[in-house]
Image (tube, rainbow, N blue to C red; front, side):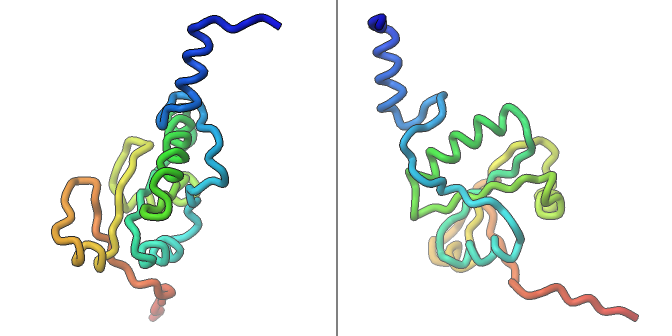
Length: 141
């Protein structure tokens, strides 16, 4: 078997030991990224008391790289921050409310209780999300 060059060994070592790599992360265990299924579930997740980082995505090369970065970040910040991925073509209603046209993008959500306890939550991508997890009631006529 051919011995690896010094450069190959060094790059291999860097990939194994660096927190953030350009390659697919290794040995992270089970995925900590939650896949969006409904706004109700999102609200329940918010009320667990942790900030929620939401990645709004569509299929593409940028999304593949973002998925890898999300996996690493979710493993690193677990359980203090929750990471959620929304596939916007599957859930357009939730994504359209963000009023953004370029994908993928990330926003951080805090429940109103978290925001009140921590003082002022600022920044264009930090959102206080207030919603009641009640079924929609439609009135006819």
